[in-house]
Length: 474
Image 1: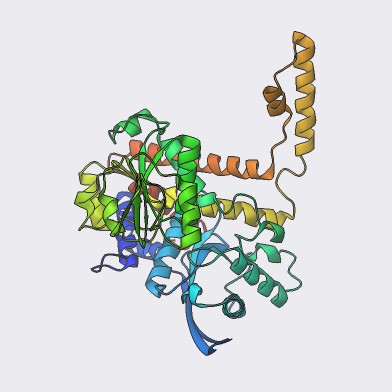
Image 2: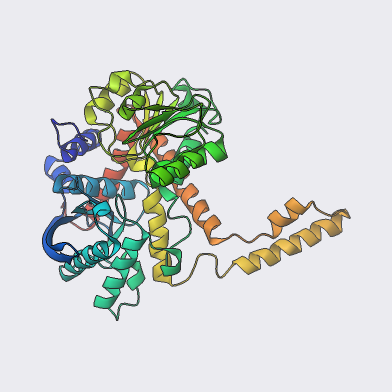
């Protein structure tokens, strides 16, 4: 959890203030950007199988400089207004940094979805969606939720169906929510998007030798020893992709029930299957791996790259001095507190910040939202013509050379990109471009010596420009 001396909102605000100081904003302008535009608090009754229950929830719209506002929807017992407001703010800065045309939002219900059967969870979701719709907070052009902790494709489907029932004449009803199943206007690659974004962030970081030299790590991503905290959608996909596609060694995986440690590297998919079968990491059958009861302590184990992909406030002032990683990639929102961030930077530990590293989810949500508005899948108009052009190219090469091309090259030239390939390509392009903007901003201003401050400088500049264009700061 967050530092007990500061709320999550306060922790986020202190990070943002570093960017504001560099930009020299007027205090009133800074306050206008930082504060949530609107926060809806709800208490609504739902008839469950166990009886009538009053559910508490929130939907925060941080910034409406771009519409719609976009944000994840959490169902968890720890959800509260402070957390929702902080995460809404992070989403605004994230979208601005990544050049995604959304404002930031966040929603949540204070409940444990594991304690509800499917029908009860559906009833809660329908009631929550009805409340949001009645008050004008959900609409393809106003507010668009997405999955987060405790929610999934099913929940998004229930939201979409409820919105459609309430707005049968809205042709764009599918775009009222993202993270839907493929058979319900979802998009390929959405489930892996945040984890794959983490992978792309690391790939781009390691493309710049001078950036890697600051960490003291060897210059290739392959072979780096990685500890991952969390094996939900984000941590699982990030760890699996880094292991299988980039040759990293996943030397530890941390969960709430403990941690698995293996210096030779864990097989992420096998660990994931064990978790699904048993509900935890304990009793994992690989004799090379050892189980550590106090999982949080494994954050302090030696490694090259540490990826906190669980919840906020995991690296704090009281454990920052014991972190051995040379590079931290924030796959979760706010996993490093402000005080820990200061201590880590003083020690020369490089942090790839959350507003960049975990932005893959909202990037692909943007693709899904755009696809729903267009009512056409990506590549539908051009795939066949690309294949035909590739065939003509193969024929021309073979005619001119008098030799047949190898089968693998023939396939590559004649292959029309699938929608999944286009989504991954678009995600990679946005992640790589954003990192280049981050490092260029840092290199151009001697006041900026870390990627997080560079990220906030970029995001705040874009949001302020939108406000000024609308005459709000005149």
